[in-house]
Image 1: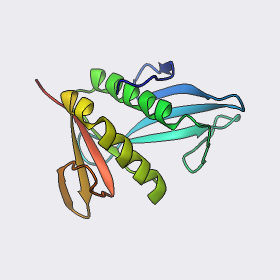
Image 2: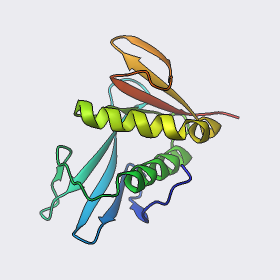
Image 3: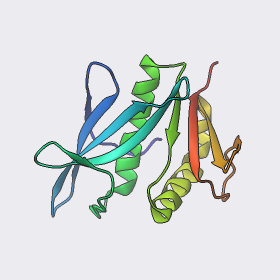
Length: 147
């Protein structure tokens, strides 16, 4: 993504990234967390709010007016993740239909840029196929494109 993104920090494993979502009204600490799944090479991507006590929540609707900047930051985190885990696959599933729609819109909008470096697939039920614009999917899989 060529959009503006937030500065972020990664832990030593490159599985945990955090950044601040900033608006005139509030500042929200966010994290992008990659968790290994039972499927070999597959990592779940979670975008979460980090509460003051350090716990995380993926159900919060922040409405901070910076969704595109947040998603650009997530894509930057994905790029950094793939620098350390080029063999991995990233699994992305929204926790609400509305959020899934937003993910689909952003992916569709940035598809030409994304496809330069990554393969992206959509999955419905047990069928996985190359991502198609305007088609609804239950979840997405992102792979680093080997050149």
